[in-house]
Length: 513
Image (cartoon, one colour):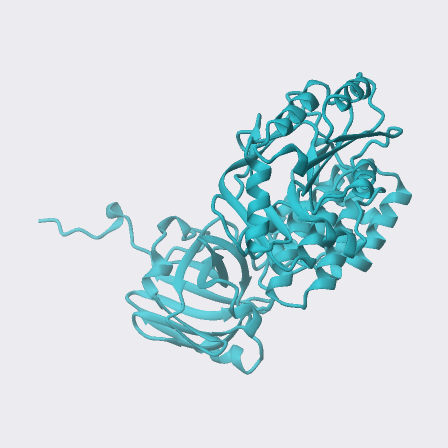
């Protein structure tokens, strides 16, 4: 019923433990076929397997020259397997005693093509926990299946053979992602058995697990391009595709743009950039940029529009403290060439800009409040919770002015108390010649939040010359302060606040009797 496939190399006692755990399974031995492929081990593994084969009739063993990865061994075992289902097992892990019987029962009861076991980790306390509940009919996104594309799953063998599927033997790492993703897209039904730990993975003390080794640039290139091609071939444009692609653009690709890129030779760098720009970056969702750190985001944007030499230059700049430049929001200064390559929006500090710029439609100021109407393109209008904020140039001060009070189509209305702009006494400048009034100027921006985290922010633009004079004239005395809505040279909306300076107590006139 089940073919358990193990590709091994110098696993020693851990392989023996794995095979003993398979011998202790509650599923009868005659229903289990164990296929072990030795990838040219040098530690006596082959001798041990020959001795074991004589005492355990359900074990098949094969030997091959060392390849350095699991793909060739797994492919050889797939060619020999006869079970209705296959389970891919790493040589340094082990199964709980009731694992195969439980997985097979779920597969038969639900007529599932794939059954996913809950996995526990040994030696890795920070590991992300696996599924904690049983789901008979699981969605690969909503049930969290897409987060773990490891091969430790029960898979109907006819599904694999119908696809003509094998592990990519030109990849040392990431080959399991491509294989399992292909199976998930083709499966009619996927089940999760998550009520208890069934498969136990080990993080070796010396970190020698193959999955923990640094990947080459070529391996990252193959993983990224093949995963994107799979997702695009099996989905239509939209939010679901974007959620599936997130794995590539947040987890797989960003690390490749730093050390693996810098240690590769110039030919490999050029090929990598050409492939990414032709096959990968055209499908990058804008939403992933908000999940990257500033340096990761700068590398991704440079790789998307620049050359290999541009990315090398950026990595060298990022080795030193990065300078901040002037602008409507804080931006990085990366040098003359890179500043021309990347727009101020691309170089924005903290979070990326929204996919579409917000525009100011209407302004009105009463004695106590400021009312703004802001237009935002429909796709961007659904980008999480939207709120108004203000930034004081030259400082790290951002003030959250609150969410919209109403929305009609893509037009948002915000109502702000004038006092909100006056709350920070330290923000007022006491510059030269400012003997009579204090003044400060806030840049208005729209920001999108999701789960309490700011995902994007953009200055609010004043779109046309017809609106700018009207906005500039929107001025009113407000409790001893003067508020004026205007426009920066770059076209962003600003609120300028002036108020009479209060004389210090020692300078005030006193009546002497």
